[in-house]
Structure formats: C-alpha cells, structure tokens
Image 1 (tube, rainbow, N blue to C red):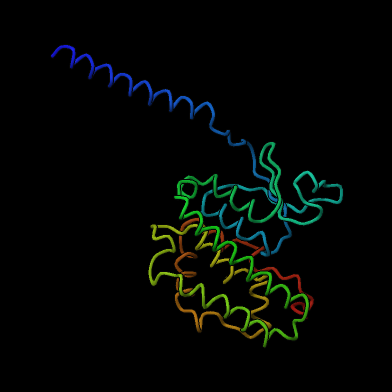
Image 2: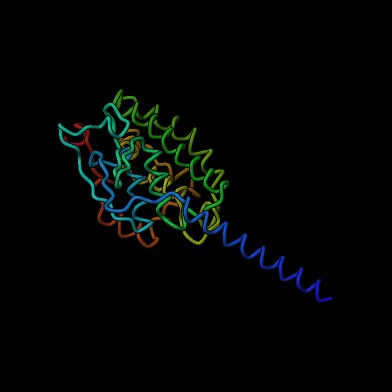
Length: 245
C-alpha cells in the first residue's frame, strides 16, 4: 500500500516536473516580439494600406505613419519600389498581407484565434485584395467604362461575400469584429479605389447585398473603429484628377 502511494507521488511529481520543463522550454524558445514604435509607410490614401490601419485601430496599436523620402531604401524591406512597408525594431517587411498578419499577431485577441479562424481571416483579406485589383484597373485604366465594368466586377465578388456573412453579429461569431469584418468594412468605406469605382461606376453595393451593408454598420460602430473612422483622412482621400473638377 505504501509502495502504491509512493508510486503515485512519484508519477505526480514527474508529471509536474515535465509540465514545468515544457513551460520553461517554451519560454526560452518563444520568439521575442520586437519592441519600440511601429513605423508604417504608405500613401495617404486607403488603397492597400487601409486594412493595416484598421487592424491597428481595432487592436489599440499605435503606428507612426509617413511617406518615405527619396533616399529611403525600400529594398531593406523586401520591396523594389512598392508599399506598404512596416518597421518594428529590427523587423522590416513589405507586402500588404505580411504587414496585416504581423499587426494582427500583436493584438492578443486576434493572435489567439484558431488555425481555422485565421484561415478565414486570410481569405477575407485576400478577397479584399482581389476586389481592390479589379476596381483599380477600372479607376486608373478606363474610368469611362466604370458604369459597365464596376457592377460586373463587384457583384461577382460581393454575391459570394454576401453568402458568407451572418445576419447578425460578426463573421467569426465572436463578440467583436476581427480582420474578416475589417476587410469588408475596408471594401465598403475606403474611397481609393473602392469608393471611387462605386462613385464613377454609379454602383451601390448595399442594394443587392444587405447583409454586407449591415455588417459594415455594426463593425463601424465598435470601439476603436468608430473613433478611427471619425478622424481618418486616408479613408476618404482621392488621388484622381476627375474628382478635383
């Protein structure tokens, strides 16, 4: 009987030591997040930078934003010429998707999402990129064709998005919006190139996509996002000469 008790104690102690060893190993080997300011480089329009700004606003991240000067070495960020770019400590990265995912990783409630949830986040962010590309091609390459091309392009995508959205709440079923919801908000509220294409294409996404319109309103009303939308200049800024007339 005494031996059984000793065996049990030994097993319990062994399990406790193993668990402690695992925790210690994870603490030692866990990647260290860079410290210091987040520097974000992009044009002062929505474009491919707005979702990163929305993620920062939702997560309470402070980013210092500017447009790089002529002597700025974009190659250090992995880019021959394009933006957005992000610097955080020794980390320097380009590509909108990489910047978005990194900023999301700094927001605890986004970083804690399951692999399946994060895959959904990536999917909506990529949908945003595909919609953006089509809108930009029309806005910068043939805006006179916007009334015929934009409804076709946007309905193709927004019909799909509408079928993925909940009637209430947010996309992942959580009590707060995540990157998926922010990507939909970005497509609805970002002027360049989305809003510009809607304006010149005489297109109203909300008429045929009520769940999308409702999700945009719910997301826009949440803390952090509401304040950001009220003060953002990039969200509504236009680079188009036709808008200056």
